[in-house]
Image 1 (cartoon, rainbow, N blue to C red):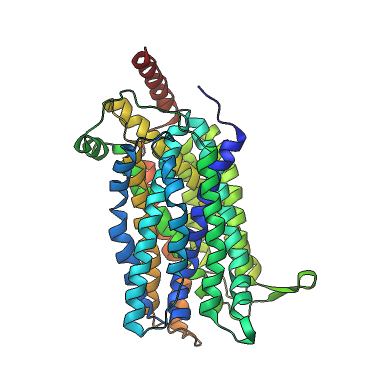
Image 2 (cartoon, rainbow, N blue to C red; image 1 turned 120 degrees about the vertical axis):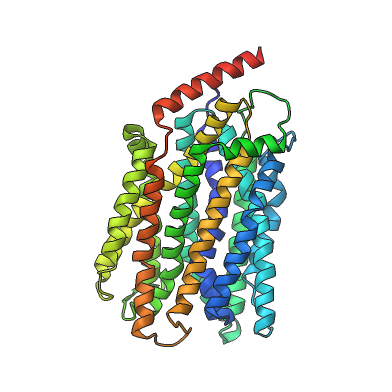
Length: 464
């Protein structure tokens, strides 16, 4: 079995750093951008995000099937990183561009630009996710690769959270006038360039190694039938949707929570670099740092007690802590930050485990059927991520409208209460359901070890 070296692990992580730059912008700032910068209604924006991601989610399996049947000198999945890197950056800029139109025109533009972004995102991210399944067949190395992926994903997120507001502020002040629309567009151009470079490095420095047992082409029908019969994958699908809803709801409402609820939060000034650091930035960056800590913990903890029970324990603890968050006062900044730290550790632990377990279900399917459809399994899994994320962000928009949110004014007690529930109790429901799904997951480490040995024997026999 060929060794996956450190540079390749880092390069694989670069791919998710690039994706996460925009995923974090979508989950943290897109709803806020449309309501407070563009000036659209929260209900309309939540519906737009849900509809756009919903139909795009069903595109993912088609892209997975297409990637499984792609044959180039670079492999099946890596070429998409090369082909789609620049379109990805351009689509990102268009998404955060606010044209001077009436409300109907702005909403139509939002639908079109965000739809294009999601299509391009799928065309690069589905093959990227599938790449994990063919870089190695070693399930422990897959968990390690998944950890590298998630660490760099959160590094990309931290980069966004630290730089987005300073960049927007810097570019907005051109010529002495404040133009937030221009500031946002220029800030996104900077992030787009970074993302393009990271995707190209991921393409250049990774390698596809795992080949299917048989070289004959599978029919699309057989691939889909195999997926529908893959019980462990269905369980992960439910767990993944709930986990993404948990993250998306907490992330999507955080800006509103600190702008309209934690009103008197301190702002820290750093004289050496002449800049202010708002408590929302500290909260978000602390969460990403804690996510990384959780990812680092995932590998040793899962090696000791298994992926399933690590995931189950993390989601159970996140449920308890999220409920406790509801009872914190708005002025209790220290405890808010402490709770954010520990909840984010739990969220960080489950993310690499989820993607490593998806790769394991691809092995399980090949072991059961003799056919491998890595791209379809990962694309269908990516679909669940989009569905969970879409529901999470859309729910925030819908609930803001339900609790009578109006941008730019002091919110009513009812609205503040609704925002508080969205950052605590609603995420707790999602983590509880995620834990319930994973409780029934049947692939423990011992069974996976036997599956891996059987598959290696079959591949050797096939090669001979």
